[in-house]
Each structure stands twice: as C-alpha cells, then as structure tokens.
Image 1 (cartoon, rainbow, N blue to C red):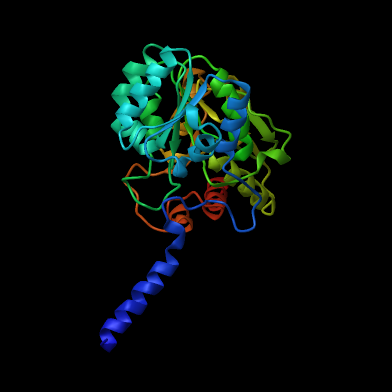
Image 2 (cartoon, rainbow, N blue to C red; image 1 turned 90 degrees about the horizontal axis):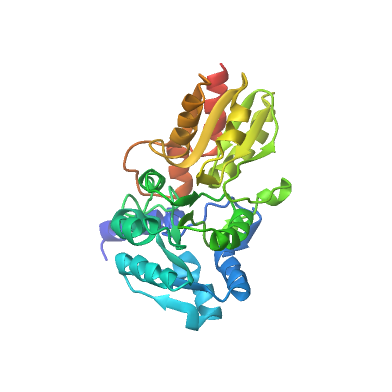
Length: 340
C-alpha cells in the first residue's frame, strides 16, 4: 500500500469515527442522562394487554420505530407491510373500519411525504381511530433531507380531524399511548425511539391529550415548547438563572388541537415570549402560537427558536443542533441577545 493510500485510509477511518453520532437512529440524549429504553414499544404492549382491539403495523421499520417489541409480545396482532407506506395506511384504515385500533409506524418523512393522500382520504376524512407513529421527527437523524422530517407538522396541521402530538420524553410517550388509543379519530405521534430521555418526572407532570402544562414559573421570560425542545427549554432556563434571568417553561405536547387558553394566559404579560420546537419555523409550533396570539388580539411579539426554512445538512446530531440553533448554548445566547 502506498503512503498516499495509507494516509487516505487513515483519514477516512478518522472521519468515520468522528461521525458515529450521525447514525440513522442516533440518540439525542446527553451523556449520562437518565433514559428509558423503547418507551413507545413497551407502552403499546401494556395498552394492548388491556385492550385486545389494539394491533400494530409497520412498513419494514419495526426495529427502528420500537414496534418490534409489540411484534414479539403479540405476533398474531402484528402486520409487517413491507416498504409500502401507502399500503400500510390503507390497511390500517381497513382494520379500523372493523373496530380494531391500529398503531401504524414508519418514518415521519414517509408518512407525511409519500402517503399524505391515503392518510387524508382513507383515515382522516372518515375520522377513523388510526394512530400514525412517525419516527425521526425534525432533526433527530443526521442522514440529511431524505430522512429529516423538518416539515411534517406543517404538512399535517392542515388535515381536518387529525390530532398531532409532539412528546418531550419517555414520560410523555408512555402516558400518551393509551390516551391516543382511547381517542376518537386519527392521531399523529412524533416518535422518540430507542434510549429516550426521562425529564418530566421531576416536574409533577402528567400528559393530558390536548393540554399544555406550565412546568416552571419565571418573571422575565416565558418559553413555550414542544417535543425534545422542552428538555432543552428546561436546561436553558437553568443556565439562564446563572445570568439572573428568571424563565418560565410551558410544555405544549399537543400541537393540534392546540391549548390556546393555557398558552395565551402565560403570554399575556410583559415577559419576553419565545417558542422552541424541533421543526421548521414554517408551519409548526411558532406559527400555531403566533396565530393564537393574533386571533386573540394580544399584540404580543413572539421570538422563534426553530429550524430554518431550508433543507438541512447531514452530520453528527450535536453538530447539527448547534449549527441550527437547537442547542442549549444557542438558546441561552439568543435570549440574552433579545434582553439586551
């Protein structure tokens, strides 16, 4: 082997080692953080033990959406549909028509981009109890635009009858699953899978479908957040305390229907208002909150922390979160700049 070839090989090996966290299913948990393994899969098994109508389907992604845990527990109630998302949701609609309660999993990009018409006309229009489980929402993979569902909520918010849930952690997911099963009509869950952080157990919190919750009070700033960004909001609030900035955090896991009453009650003050979401600045939590503010006539400025309206880079998740403003450090810097 030539020296040049050996050097190239060493460089490639070094680059590969640096990019380990850019794997398709990389965890966004911080080093040493308390986590729960596959909370969705275990919660679905528990719910299915109590309700024999619950069935599970996936489009060749059981392992990567934690649906494999359900498949092992209830093989006779599990359906592997192959790499055919439109078939997946068409079949789920048929099962719901017979009185069953399907949970159908795939990646969020495939549900939102490939199968929208099937979801809309087969499931949402007849208002069937089909629970769509979307893996890799927002910036939870480093694999680039083909797998980064940065616009999924924007796509789905305009679909009538569809409930949208953006959970923060394992607590949200475990408590949401039985409520989604019991809810009439279709739901879309932005799935956090694998080793999922456990955060909300320290805040006297319980998930209630359709409700936002105030997790902590604060006199200077109010954060309204959803998804994994509630974890970051809480971390940023702690970091801002060192700068003598007192931050309240409101967690809004249900994006649609939106709990405008709770959120607007917190925004109707002279505190700096900031929304935080793992989604494009277009069509997600920020625009949901801004719409509620304008409709209520509050005349309140709202500052977004969100992904930009562009296709994102591939790379390691910590690098991407820092680059696109989702890291705690970037949040703190933005708030301090706004406060002047």
